[in-house]
Amino acid sequence: MSKQYLLGIDNGGSDIKCALFDTKGNEISSCAKQVSISTLEEGFTERDSEEVWQANLEAIRKCVSTIEWE
Image (tube, helix red, strand yellow):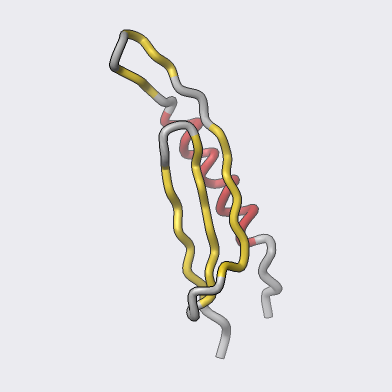
């Protein structure tokens, strides 16, 4: 039977955080990628959706690269 993992992603304000856990809750790896924020007017912020998507992909790749696949 192959090992199973859980992946969590937090798309926060200026950071995309990713953590990989085993099924017992032990952290295997984690990382964070920064994304830029634009402030067009006071009280409003925007993030570029493509930049957020790419940061998610990079964070996931980095976390799963620590696994020794069978």
